[in-house]
Image (tube, rainbow, N blue to C red):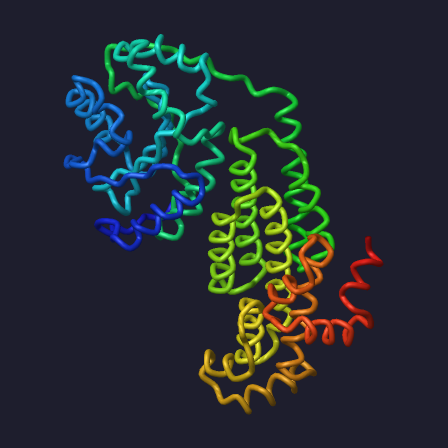
Length: 414
């Protein structure tokens, strides 16, 4: 039975700003929050598209009536006669506010698409369409709203909106009430069903390995998954890959939590990767990032093995894993944990069997192996990525642990 949600009033401006930034970064999609019965900024729901028409006020009033009727804790997936698609929702935690995501398109705006618009809307003629085409050309193209909803659920979780149990409904959304049109439902092909089943099997193998901290198998399966063609979710390879890696990040976080890793550290890692996914500019960057994600979450699970250590040592290990690329040291970790550095040093050495500084260096070298084996990055770039900015010192540490220089190690593997 679903738990009762607490009424929280209105979404605060800092949280609202964060939501806008995340949606903008993820897929450059418009999001609007407006209060029920007081839609003063309603024109922003369609990026002022309807202001082009003489009866714009009437159209926006029809749209307002539709928005006012949105029932809490449901996702309304809908489209208008202009073939603009939207997702509208309202949380029972914020019942006075409607969240609109869109407009977006479901396919590329080709000439065939524009012909469909001419047939669908009484407001647009050929002359209008020539003027409005640039508007359509700048809208994001999302081929599967369900994949978008997966990302929305994760983004909403940062605003403490639990949308995981929201029902999905597809109401008739016609701000232009005189237009009647019928869209044939696309049948799901057998090949798509088989591909999704195969993907689900691989995902389960990844999560099973990750739950044990088994990096070798988790990495092998994740590389296979991200290289496989899948039923395309978005008509944009970069965005499609972003959504895939974004979903992987969410699944990995949940798996790490279920394996006993403290939620604080899971959310720390999760949010950092959200930012990196958003910033990625190429599919190659996202593939490398997915490998880093697998490694980091496996480390979190592996470090759960230190759960029998004292709280101060367990916390120190988690701080090291979260900040390997930063300037961390015994002094900085002791300050962060608010403990005496000599006490931390003695306790760490006693429980782990090596000094904290040696542990940091060995973890940096071990982490750098992932980039060394899967990218063409220079040794200097790899060293900097794990927080070592002196390449000669990095090479010295690497040779001490593996018996050869990183360059020799890489050559032997290729």
